[in-house]
Length: 116
Length: 113
Image 1 (tube, rainbow over the protein chains, first blue to last red):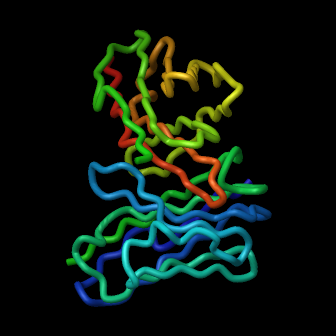
Image 2: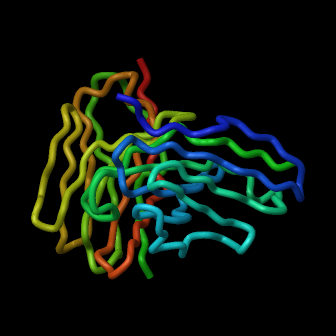
């Protein structure tokens, strides 16, 4: 079946511009997560959705970052006024049930963001 | 402070050999530990997931162990193949009222012919 998809696969933008990254989770998965992976670094948790609500936004690095999820499915991560330190691979994952604890998270291929 | 530390940072082995990757954590209260494989340029793929009561779990040539008392886990790869070359990431979740997951920095494994 279809896995988690993300778009675009690559995004190059100029410093100060806004970008939107999209995630399509596996159909029926209620939990959705956004992570960031900088070059040579481990994964960094950004935000977690259960349905359309975000019980944990603790990982968002600044108020320039926001995310929403509509219809319990597609999610969009928005970065405003991008900075060079925002350059990273942004990964989305989804899981089926309660989310967060024992459920396997299935990851998308990621969006590679480069801020010039 | 919740932390997950993995060792070694990188490892080179010959095809067909076995290897063991280590993960030490201080995440509390512990909920579960997962191992992921991440090929270059791809998203992580789940290998195993273990809760507090589980000491070992296998997935083909991958066997993960968990010692919740010492807060250590290992991932053993048997009869390595070239396709095992990847980063292996240890992930520990805490059973707080909210969602708390800590990722290790990963071990980069290179399998050579």
